[in-house]
Length: 150
Image 1 (cartoon, one colour):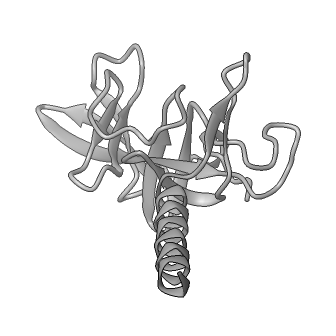
Image 2 (tube, rainbow, N blue to C red):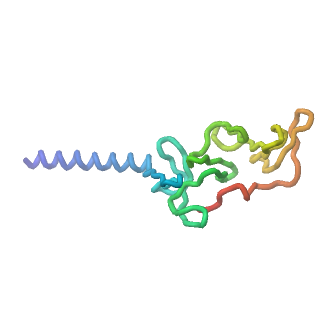
Image 3 (cartoon, rainbow, N blue to C red):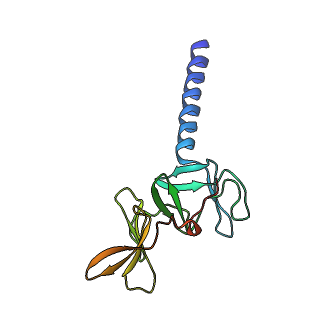
């Protein structure tokens, strides 16, 4: 009888450990009626294969544990974009070209026929003249288009 109880206890412990590990990798994801996305983990978080940035603080823009949406976010020297579903985009869009590591390569300026763009690696706007791209103006980090909240 003791062996059966011990075996059951070991199996239950292993089950709970595996369940906890799975919950940790996938996180707890929920969405309210406004489309706001909430995830239990904060910071750069992976949920079911998608990457999110989840806020650890509350502000006028986002609640605590709310994922950023429709915004850019810097991570080190690389810029990333998060769509309306809160996921980091992983493929090109009409105005955003993506690198192989899913960071933003270029942001094309709407209404310019892809003749103006922002280059995050150079932190400069660029214009196309005679088939070649040329830097314009001073360096900038487009801070007004980015989410900076922790």
